[in-house]
Image 1: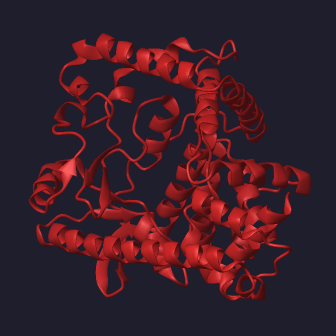
Image 2: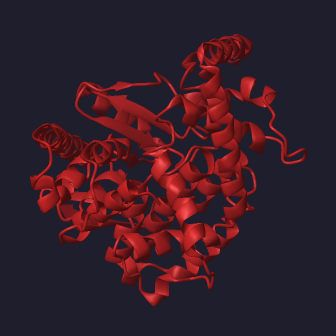
Length: 416
């Protein structure tokens, strides 16, 4: 692991626990880039401002980090207040959405507004969708789909925006676009009623019970890791939630679901990253599997996490690598990259880009043609070096996913 990655992790540890980070020849430009890649600039600034090294840093680097922190944290404050406003309107209308991730995870941090979120996730019952839609539209929000009635049982979420906040209304938590996502969604088929009330900043909100929410955070991490990559912020959220709710989590259920998704090594590695690099001390009850993980193995995973950024799609190389992973995962029989299924996917994959398909499935061939043209146009415009680096990056991720048994399409059937 290189020196600046270690410095980055020391700063995150400092942000979590309030201690002063020990840094080794910090390169503030590189650290700022890493923080931006993971959407953690305010967190890094908060920790950096307590160090002598930062006080001696170039004035322009300090100013850049401070200004970005002020902008991002103030916008986060506005988004949080907007969420409370909308949520209270929904509650007043007799609707009780469950808030997932975002606000709930932010509330666990010592400085919540410094853990920024791009959007907020609300899980709603399908029968409440029409009422939610009316309220959100009346408040100036625009949905990405005008009418999802034909796909209520399959669509994962509908995204609403109003210029201040992005809200994802989840109907099926992980969607049904492939077998992995379907199995993840099935884990929560009876979970909506297992909710609890919290008070955050003086506002009443509802969310899942700790066991179900912890499972959701794990599978959300698993989902991103198994395709394009998961970032360190995902892992911090997962570990902060575990630290807060350890006594309330049913680890028998956690063990069952993690095992059914063949995620034992991944789960243990997340806990080990927390212990080794971020200062967490998981209780014995959370250590479900007796697996030994060497330092070099852990560093390989951590290298992938740091390189991935928030969602593993920050660069063309990463996007090409993700495409390679998916092309490799499509055929479990040949275990060779398959490009045709990527060019001709099911309609469900194309709804966000081609919403007309929801009511007009006969347009699917035209959507395929548009997708193919776009794919080859981007590929032709890409630098040959970028393409080869993307394939190399994809092959590296395929090896890692196979090692962790999180390769797409290998999920065991999950009991309801």
